[in-house]
Image (cartoon, rainbow, N blue to C red):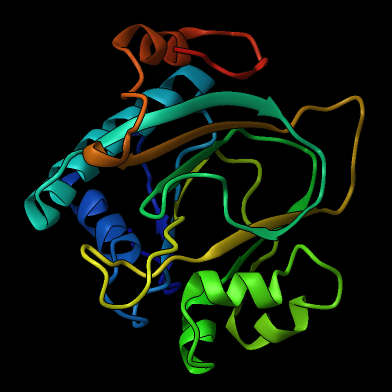
Length: 238
């Protein structure tokens, strides 16, 4: 069931349906600023960690098919990891090629946080800058620069942290007119109530078009390790 929020999909079952895949693709692989550049899919509370990661991999595969149909290339994994993160992070792009897509799988937690998305691509265009020119001049990782993005900010508060959620973020930094351009967004989070006795586990994957996977995509063995590991140990290597 789609909520009234343009970026939120509320799933009553632990499954990735064709409608969900298309809805995520429409929001993330956007061609203009009518779509948000990210999407949240929330699953039932009983969805465990392994199933959540299976859903992430299934969603990636289906999104890759749609991306290939539209742009002529499949999406390949270039990083995967599991983290217990209770650090506030300012708005940022993750380090990756200029065309890249971040998928975060949040496990249920009692640690309260806010998730932030800023449409820096739209802000840059309004100032006659490319996305990278905007970041070079007004990087929100530097104190005092965040205010420029105030009108482009989406703030997720009380975002059902008792439930597993997948967040797909357009991490692109290509300029308008570039081949396969889809305007990217920045993301960040603020921890409201840190708890050293609790966990806040995030499963993270980054995908890029096949031609940009300079060191090659991750092996199937790495994907299987990501799917089944019980460790929370940072990046899972090739």
